[in-house]
Image (cartoon, rainbow, N blue to C red; front, side):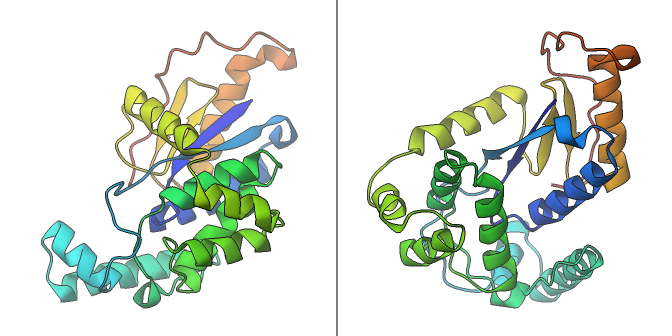
Length: 234
C-alpha cells in the first residue's frame, strides 16, 4: 500500500505529522507492506533564501497577530512537539526558501535515502537553527545523510530535480491540497493536517481492508481520490 505525504521542511506541523505517521505505522499490522513517499510542497515558493527577522515576527505579519499572540502560539506548538519527543527551538529558526531542500530530498530518493534526508532537514531547521535556504548549510546537512558530496554540489549548482518538485506541487493542486501535512493513502484516502496517530492508523486499516478484503490480495482501487478525508490543522 502506498502512503504519499505532501509536506514542507519549514512547516512545524509537518514534523509533528511525520512523528504521528511513524507512530501509526508502528501500530499498523501491515507496515512492512506499506511504502511511504515524501512529496514536495512549498508554503512560500517566492521566499528568498533567507528572510531576516524571527519566525515570531513572520507569523505576526502573515496572520495579523501581535508579537505576544505569535509568541503564545509558538509556545503552544513547542509544547505539542515536546509530547512526541521533538525539541523545537522556534526562537532560533532561520526562515528561508525550501526549494533546494526539496530538490535534495528527491536526489536522496534515488538512493533510498529520502526519509533520512527529510528527517535531517526538519531536525536541522526546527531544533538546530539551521538556515535551510543556504546552499552551504544544505550541502553539510546532505552529507550527514550519506549522500555523495559531489552529487549534492552538482544538484545545488544546477536545476536537477526542479521539475520533480514542481510535479509534486502540480499534483497537490490537482488534488485540492492547500495545506500541509497532507497524507494520501492508496490514492483514494486523504488525511489533512497533523492528525493524531490513532486517526491515521484507522485510515490505514480501512484502506487496507478495502484493498485486501478478507486478507486476500486484490487489485488496487481505481484511484479516484475521495472518502476518508479527515479535517485538521495545516
